Length: 432
Ligand code: ASP
Image (cartoon, rainbow, N blue to C red; front, side):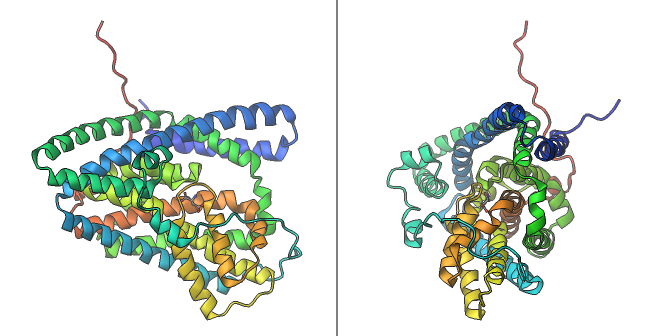
């Protein structure tokens, strides 16, 4: 009998079929009203968006219960501080490498030199980026209920950690509550599996919608920029992360990359690190064998403040636009770009397209014309998908490194190819 396909394999097939059908519609049926109205903006849109909502629905409860378990599992404030400090430092460090790599490659390749589109013809107007002071002030929620209602990840993390520390300080009462949180977490993980059962369908519609709108033909005039970003993203994903995973986390990078596949697929098709949190958490804990005590903290934090892929796009975009407009950037400008991209990465929520908005902040700092962003807008959606996959890989890399330092990796799980493979859930049936 043929081996049953895993859910991940099904999702990959759905993704490819969605991409092909979407691209075909874009090429042959972009002006067929019926297809556009009822398929692209009808069925594809409705099912795809409902599926992304389904993923987002999981994020807040899952992060809350999981983080309570994590903090209570760590058990003391000192260790928590150490884990937090290490994770934060490593997130900044990997983003620093990402942007430096991107600037170096882009300066070498020089995309945009001789770009024929006349400068100043685009009409991009940037939304103002939040001032940095606000970003820091807003980590503390003035109203936690609001933070939960809006899904503000940094505020939720802040409040839940504080609450869990208080639980630790409350002795027995806290312990009972922690046991309940553990049960709720277990159930939430099951809810994740239930939603994942619909993933092949959801991913198919997401891909079909995106690619029926984003013609691959758009890439051609922008090939220099597009492929420089892609090359940097791949170098970072397979080069930098592999080195870090093997040197600092002392794990086999090939196994790591292979096991990350479900998270990559979800990041790619949703273009949102935030919506991918449930999948990243599941992969990191169940497939890579990282203890919940570390993962529950580093994964949502990473999805919020760590955006290596986004920083790479910003680095290449800076060099590209400077070339297109014939503006010379000197070393101090590049240093500013590195600093600003790291800060932008912290201030950027992991949702689709937001990296472009923060790019305006980088451009402002080095005196590049913000309307230049209009030029790269056309290809941004596809790059957004790829860079989001890199963003979540960065979160998992740092999680592994921190977990290694804390002795929180179960190598038996990591080395078992079958560990945590998502299988379809058998829905309970009432006995007749
Ligand atoms: N979509 C990216 C993410 O969610 C952010 C961005 O680069 O726009 O990670």
